[in-house]
Length: 507
Image (cartoon, rainbow, N blue to C red; front, side, top):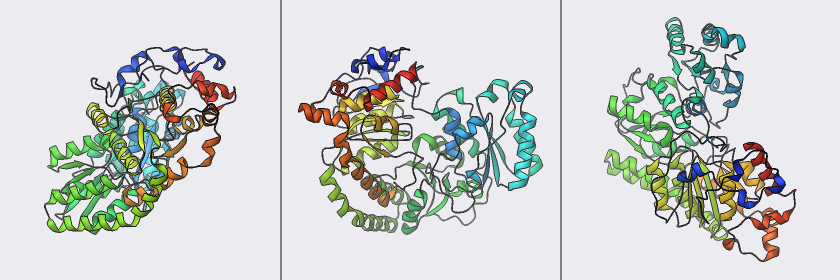
């Protein structure tokens, strides 16, 4: 199998599904440098670039990147300055939970119309902010710029300053025009906005053993789980940025002695700025899987240099692993040798998933991210088994091609990847921010393993066309390097439907 095939017939428009052959499931030539294979020599992956035109990228825009990072700050007002479609696109798309205020669950918008584009939307934005702040009494307000705002030149920052002077609360402009770059640029815009809050609060009473959880968004209550482990060790969590976030806690978070950065893509920029300005060091960690969750707790104890903290960390790990490991061993017997594909947002999540699957006896056959950098992909090359395909900013046709060629049993991704998996007849595990089940920490590993086992071992996959055809022809899964058997399934088969969808998407 050659992951860097140069043909690009699938990208042409107007190709009827009936003539779209498996050989047409080939990558665009301009995408070749963004794909690699573990165990083979090659230069660094081309990454961090604007998506290739026509490839129907799975990556979100700058606006979406900033919105999903700041959205979980529960007691702030979030208003989108732009067309209503932008607000609808990002409304409630994280499964973030709040232990108190629910204001963040609303998606306010200035709903810009044609006349606003012609004459400008600054007055409309100012009126909306004054009305919403008076009604909801938020601790702060975030105003998100969109593509149309960047085009017509509304001075959102000036409006925010005027409203802040009148209302007495921080009103922060988020420079998140969607056309400015990639999703990662949206993360940076979010960090720049929230940094204006940091350093404005009183740090009295903060423990010498204290930290901020950064890049955890409390999806299905995951921040609460991790906070519980840390508090059992005797470590104070000053602020979570941004899961179940509070403006007042963020304003004083510069008094913490450590930043623990979970989602490296979204929060590393903010952690570096805090280190530079306030001298707060940071560590990049992951809370997914037994190995990484344990390492995160040990890293905290090592940072503070306390033997007592280290002993408490070991105690927490022993107790939690003892609860879940017997069941994990049972599931591992069934899952041993199965193969999985991973496509997620950040590279650190990908690292953790590779390790977690290995704990379950599974092999990672395909792994990709939306926001990884060259060093992240080099790490994936080193940690993955030879033959694993590694991709940056992939698209549906690439994901379909590699899933079929690698004959995976499970696809781990987000909402945009689910239809691809099901149309190919592959089990799916949702590991993105829309999910409603906790997957972080030790109990999260048990939840993850349970879902993986139920998905992979379901008998329904024995009846999907590709498996039925392969069984009839006596083909072994590990020997399948072509998608030809799927063509025998008829025009109504799942793979034909996917081909039709791909053709419509690129036409």
